[in-house]
Structure formats: C-alpha cells, structure tokens
Length: 84
Image (cartoon, rainbow, N blue to C red; front, side, top):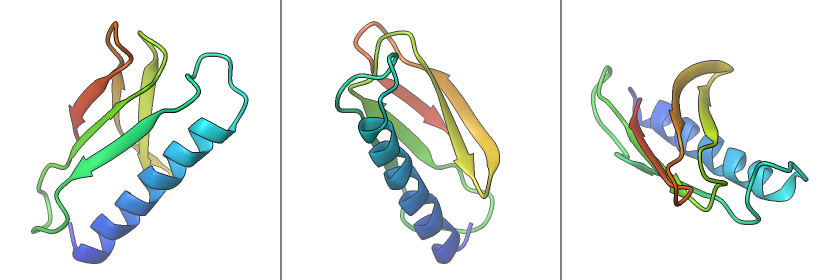
C-alpha cells in the first residue's frame, strides 16, 4: 500500500473512531480508540489495527474506500486487535 493509501486509511480510521465516540449508539462505550501500526510500506503488506474502550463482545468493522477490509470482535475488556 502506498504512503498516500496508508495516510488515507489512518485518517479514515481516526474519523471512524471520532464517529463512534460522537454518535449516540447504545452498544458503543463513551470513548473508543482505534490505532494503526505501519505508516509506510510496499503494496500488499498487512496493517495492524487495534482499539479499546468499546463495549465488550462488540463487532468492529474496518472499511477502506467504502470496502470492508477487516472485522474483529472485542474481548471481555472491550479491546480488539487484527491485521488487515
């Protein structure tokens, strides 16, 4: 994935985190955080995505350019970790 693509993905995930924390959705905790690991690299590399502050056992769906690129379920503590 190009630098521009990674920046776009990072920005999208950040905006998704802000949307999750701002929207009144009953299954989402008050403050949920999402992070990525990998700011650059060649096309086809995996990107580590993790977060915390979600309601426990909630499905997290990760999008890139309106396409689902990953899903995970939070654990008992409301945390998740996945590679996309």
